Length: 271
Image (tube, rainbow, N blue to C red; front, top):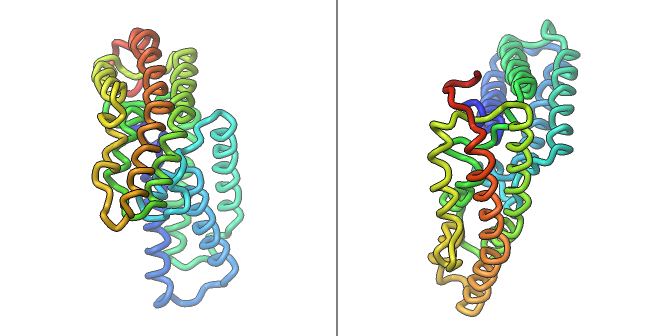
C-alpha cells in the first residue's frame, strides 16, 4: 500500500542502490562523457543514499549498516518538513546536471532518479505521511525488526535496549500523524483498520518476558558472559515495563477510542 512507502520509503532506497550499481557496472565500457556531470550525478546518488540511511535507521539496520541501530526514524513534524525540503532540493540539484553531458546509462539513471523524488513530492501533497499504519505494518509491529537483525554481541543488545527506550517517542509521533490525518479527513478504511487492535493488544503485556520485543533476550548467545546476559536481560525487561508497554497502552487507547471510530467506511486509496 502507498502509505507504507511514505512510512519507510524502502523502495526509493532500494532503487537508489540499483541505480548506483547499474551506473557503476555500465560506466566502464561506455565512451567517456564529460566528467563533471557524471561525477555530480554520482555524488548526488551517494549523498542521498547516506541521507536515506540517516533518516530511516530501520532501513539502515536491515541493509546491514549498523551505525543507527539504537534509534527509530524521527517522524516529528519538523523532521518530516526537513526531509521534504531536502527532497525538493534534490530535484533542483538534479535539474542543474545537464543530461546531454551524460552517457546513455546515466541519462536513464538521471531520469529514473528524478521520477523517484517527484513521486515522493506527490506523496507529500497527497498527505500520505498521515497514514503511517496499515494492517500489515506500522509501529504496532515494530518488534518484527528483531527478526532481521543479528544479536551476536552485547552491543547488539545495548542497541536494542536503546530502541526499546525510544519506542514511546516513536509511538507518540505515530499518534500525532494519525491525529492530524483525522483532522484533515485522511484516514484508512475501517475494513483494514479493524485488524489492527489485536496487533496492538499483543504488545500490552503484564509480564515483560511475554512481550514480542523480549524475544532477542530469549536466544542470547553463549559467547556473551553469563553475568552480562543477566544484566542485559534485566535491562530489557525494565525497558519493556517502563517504556514499551505504556507506549502501546497510549496507542491502544487512541486507536480504539479515536482512530477506529473515525476511520472511513469506503475502501480504496481515497474517498
